[in-house]
Length: 102
Image 1 (spheres, rainbow, N blue to C red):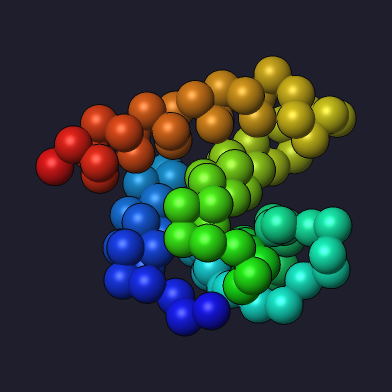
Image 2: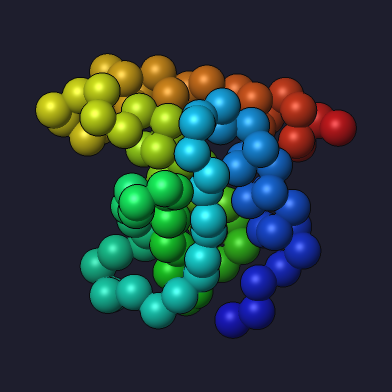
């Protein structure tokens, strides 16, 4: 499935607006059947992987979810804990207000 320009625009917007010290790289790639995305911290950046089998809207949702992981990295023992929820809320609101409503 080809990556659309809307997905690329959304990914670029999210990377610029995450407000974290490390750069974020986003790649669409083949992933195991039970995984839509992942966020990994490498030596000096975050790598977000998104399944290339997903449609565009689902891919954007996954990037939002994974960017929240980058934003809340090492702030909770629970990867979907309070700090992740706050980060997700913050980036999702920014996405709605400044990307979708432009």
